[in-house]
Length: 268
Ligand code: A2P
Image (cartoon, rainbow, N blue to C red; front, side, top):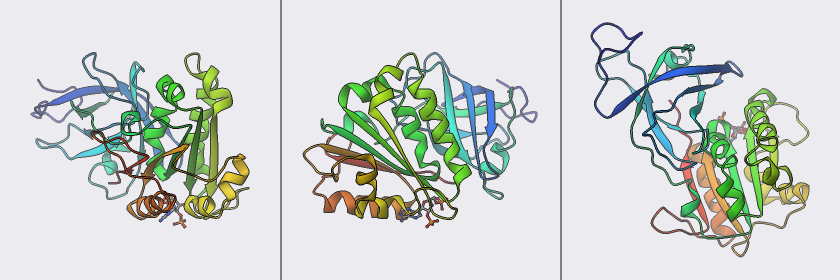
């Protein structure tokens, strides 16, 4: 198969779907989101990631992207960083509606509800584009079936970088499918580190100091009631993992559900 819009001669690589871009929205000079058509046969669990690429080479560069839309959605959403010399995002940031994006057929990942033991509260700790898997999970009714309270913590350098998460949370609270649950049970906790904002500081510091719990009127994270999902840079992951371990939580995986799970936010 020769792809429309692809340079002549490049076909569809084995194991890939060719998807059509249906929406593109730029938030800052570093961040944008896009939506693509969803193949009827494609299945995934909310919170998982897939490999994404562009049909611009015989062996296209593919990178891991968390799916930012829920498993029930008819289209697929992704939230991406733009890196000037990034092997993929240098080109991906220029996509327009109607363009083709490649996606490998298999979704995978550890930020799934099945990797956690039952609990009362689900904390989602994210920085930067690490919010993407949680944008999926907060729109999944299963999340509210399993947890009484869902706390999405998102830390960024600047205020404009918080916009994507704020829009999704607002839309989720008005969503016909999950709005009824999310309205009272989904809480967004935002902070910035390099620009003035009502809450300033790193998410990690705000949790350990007790400032986050105090603002949310919730107890400190404990193994009895709290489960945690973490997505961000490697340094952020390590610091958040330490917080969980120091709070007595055990790390889980798909085949061994426990009290917290981590995944790196994939950056070009
Ligand atoms: P900081 O400005 O202090 O580096 P980035 O855009 O580099 O991915 O960062 C996103 C956010 O994550 C920034 O607010 C950044 O804060 C914060 N951050 C970076 N490293 C850590 C860490 N180890 N723990 C918690 N937050 C972090």
